[in-house]
Amino acid sequence: MKRSRNRADVLDLLVATKHASQVRLYAILARKAPFGVIFRRGPSNCVLLIGWNLQNDTFQAGQWLKGRIYERRCDLSPSGDMLLYFAANYRKPYFSWSAISRPPFLTALALWPKGDGWGGGGHFVTARRIELNHRKPEMGSAEGFALPKWLKVDPFGEHPGRGEDDPIWAERLMRDGWKLLSYPSKTKDDYGARVWMEFSPAITWQKRHPRMPKQCALEMRITGIKERNGPWYLTEHSVICGATSAVHLGRSEWADWDRSGDLLYTKDGALYRLRWVGESLLPVEHAKKIGDFTDLEFRPLEAPEEARRWP
Image (cartoon, rainbow, N blue to C red; front, side, top):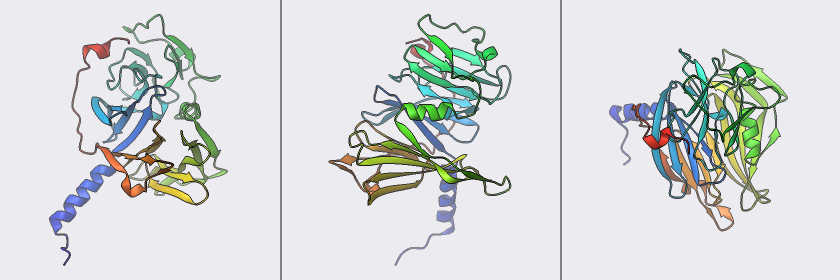
């Protein structure tokens, strides 16, 4: 006979589920190295930066920030040895700022005060050149920060300092192989509803498989923005292979292809790898949980000496 859950079992399950739902994971992969960073957010005013070695799926927990990192406005250098990020605590002296650090640490090697939530962040165009999404008066470094002579800093695009997650996020996606398939023709706005904004059709991006680009693609669908007690972006991922084969991940925070062809994705505070074997993905029930970050708590950490120097 199947044992029914007692009250303590149910309470433990509810607490665990609630805790997991409060943790959001977003990753950025380096373009020319098997390295990535994971932004682990939760509670909403705390973010942990985690380094990820994709060769063996090992992780290094770095520094926490008591504030907000706008992860979709961030970028890794091609080799992954530097991170350009946009953060805010909306307190003096900077309120918000863009910075360069050595992941998985956030201690700034360069820092540009911003002061508000518009724009911010940028791209590594090359290992020695960045484009900063700041208005002209905001392009100066903070006092006490000196840039190396080899680093070139240009304004981002024709109208630097504008936008929020876009245009930084969209242009990074396109640079890294994603293609925009659809954009909403109409939006349902109701700030008192469970979901503030719902898109019709969904914002849909697609990235072809690195080994079989003609046969297989990863799709990301953003159906809305700001779910009450939920994520800001309502995102779903699927893998489409041919006309009949599909792997549906459902609600998931982030997904991308590993250069090996494996599918990488995050869901409910955990990171998964689904292997590509032969000419197809394994069934989704074979996905391996390679990292569970739900139970981490804020811990102050000093950056080591090597993370305080330019590479």
